[in-house]
Image (tube, rainbow, N blue to C red):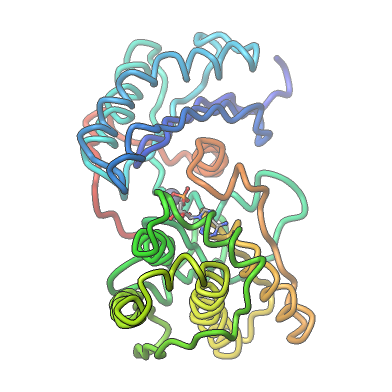
Length: 337
Ligand code: KG4
Ligand code: ZN
């Protein structure tokens, strides 16, 4: 055990994935994720069902993380958890479990901000972006542009004022009759469609902020008018609809990122969150990187969507700084940096 860094167990339960990860001396040993399928038939995450599923999953997920890592609970030096932002009932399960375990083992607790963890996922494996860098975090719950000065020093320089980017994908997919979550399906159909087949109005927001509620409404009216003339319009144009909508959403994201890069002079560019899996976004970003001289970083997919490995790496940096939480800590549904 000599020369070994801290061994930390991390727990993530902010939305609809129950996840646990063990990290030793900054090296993530595993990333166990139990996804919840109960939400699919409702077309979105149902908070009460998420909370109950976390309660069912948390013990087996933590057990699996510890046993697969070959780590006994008594060898842990800290327990980390997502404090927020997220669904209150979902967060409560992870926070309560972490508090109970830390108290029983008499080891410290580390609270982690879920959004900071999405950014810090870039430090799980090599190569890392250099400081300062810009990170665009895009998922079903969030859309943020973050300026990252150091591991634990970052600021939000732009964010959505309404829906998240992933929500825009999912809601548009729902309007086309696709099942939840529709983002990956739009991505699939878009690959066979023409991105210039249809155009949608641009939404303008001040500064570096985003707004996705306008495009959702515009898309709804667009479909309604087309379907009035041709009831089979959606079925007959699905690839073109998906490709055009995706191109529009990608453009909204990438144009903001370019503005932020121009404004700050930062060319180390990173993306995080579930939407970073989108092939249209990746392609546009690679083209921009080439053109603008960006150094582009996209984490492995398992570290893009919600996962405990990103909580573990964030906890590793906090452990080194002695940043521990009080045993009385409570979850925070809205949690600024
Ligand atoms: O990070 P994540 O797993 O969970 C949240 O924190 O929300 O992100 C899930 C979101 C969903 O909205 C999903 O539709 C979207 O990421 N997503 C995609 C793709 N894969 C996942 N959106 C577009 N294209 C994809 N390939
Ligand atoms: Zn997330």
